[in-house]
Amino acid sequence: MTFQSFSDGVTDRTVPHLHDPIARYAQTSPERPAVITGERTWTYRQLDGWITSIEHRLLGIGCAPETVIAIEAPKTVNTVALLWAVWRIGGIACPLNTRHPAERLLTQSRRVGADLLVAHSENVVTQALNESMRAVALDSLSAEPGETPALGEASEMRPTHLPLDARATGVFTSGSTGRPKIAVHTLGNHVYSARGSAENIPLGLGDTWLASLPLYHVGGLAILFRTALAGAAIAMPNPEASFSQAVIDFRPTHVSMVATQLRRLLDAPTESNVMGSVSAALIGGSAIPAEFLDRAVSYGWPVHTSYGSTEMSSQITTTPPAADRKTLATSGFLLPHRELEIREGAIYVRGRTLFAGYATNAGATGELDDARTTGGWFATGDLGYLDDNGRLCVTGRADRLIISGGENIQPEEIEKELERLEGVRRAAVVGVPDEEFGRRPVAFVRWDSGADRRDLVPELRGVLPGYKIPDAIHVMPDSAVAQRMKVDYEVLEAAARKLR
Ligand SMILES: O=C(O)CCC(=O)c1ccccc1C(=O)O
Image 1 (spheres, helix red, strand yellow):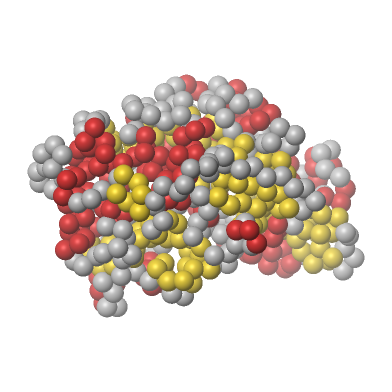
Image 2 (image 1 turned 90 degrees about the vertical axis):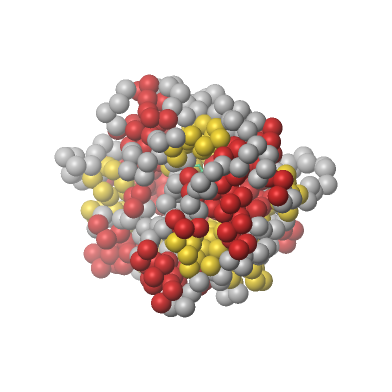
């Protein structure tokens, strides 16, 4: 049994309140940019005033501490202002995936126990009202006040201390299979996540973090907290703009991206110096194929690889600035305010960034399923180890492990090798029942357009032991691939059985 534990070294007593960072910067550096869009810049003073006006509208329609507010809203400055207003009144914001159809949005609003649905789409508001749900249009609620209040006026109206142990968000986890769970975070979870992040990736006055991830994912929300705590600015790209265009337009100092965005950036017909303004590119969400990492490193891009989860309020481990190639191949070092332990090859975590629990049928305010084992540890479901230097190496998901003839096969390892081969855009490996071995791996690949579609088995033989060579390699059906190249393994398991 491996047993290694890192403490965050924090010995101070829990600070129960946070001085609202936007109100604070509105006082101390009112003219500093808080949000930048293609059209204009909002200063901390202007954003603070805007938040205050939304706060009053929310209070005016009966919202109070612990009110659950489901939000269907695009990634815009209005949504940022709305979110901070919800946190100011002590509400619980549940941002919904805007790609879902209206029916699903209403179901999700019910699941979080929403007292109010704020929706960008008129159709969603109408349908909600038809089903006697309380709903209001984003535009009417978060319209910018006609006149921005004079300096200091806004923040003096209410106490601006936010309780860190209050529930602040309910986020739908993007599990690869099954019904998404609702992870409920406290405000303190997000705040300590941001503080630990800042100790590894410096962020300060004058910096700009591109809001390149959806606000309904924890990685998008984390950008709000990191920038607000640092007095930095968020750049809100036009929803139609590509990632590379947004980087060119805003010249941000910081970006967050998933592997697909990194790949698009590498493939974009721009020069390698597109990242010239960027001092930190945080890459998370999944493992990054070695080939992309190599190219990014060869361009000198300041990448940070990371391992995080919704339940841990984004990053858990991250590589430091200017890490060498070997370190970047790992998920990096444990950040402050988190603890990590490996038990029998499985990754357990706890600490100040660990969420409050999953919402049960009682919604985001009710009793939570706190999902912890003894000692407050949370099983991430991921497998991995800490290397001799204390860097985390993630090897795969526990629930995807294929046991074949008594041997453990981590499908992610085969996927990684397949994706390294010329012309393979995406690979997915699933286990299928087998009389002789119990289970055997079967692979699916998605080819690049114009790729030489060939038998890949001989190439795999050079890099994998025989028992890890898939019994078959099929072309991935379109029905198994969702947005962002996310694969539905359940669809593939069914397909693999049929194809046998
Ligand atoms: O894996 C997860 O669910 C969290 C991923 C995440 O938050 C993230 C994803 C991509 C880029 C940056 C981040 C981040 O940790 O901020």
